[in-house]
Amino acid sequence: MADFSKQYCQVNDMGFDGDFDVYEEWAKLKPGYGVAYICEGFGFTMIAKEETGDKVLVLVDNKWENFDDMYLEAKLKS
Image 1 (tube, rainbow, N blue to C red):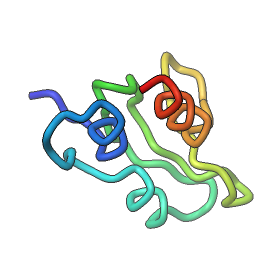
Image 2: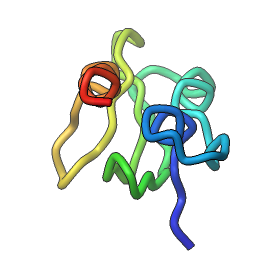
Image 3: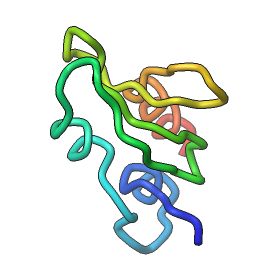
Image 4: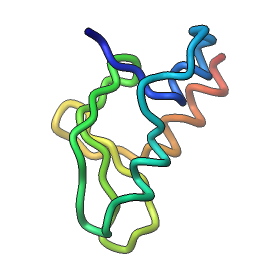
């Protein structure tokens, strides 16, 4: 079964709240750690907190990306 983040569902008006909230999961992490979550919509497989604790990072195609930038871009396109 496919999983979608709350943020993806909001941007794409999917009619449900999503399976998890990226920011809630990120807030639980210690700096420098990550947790495996798959969002079929955004295409990431992990959420991580940067060493400084500032940025929400997601793993897309084995590259770390800033989730805030990804989310903003998706919002602007919708």
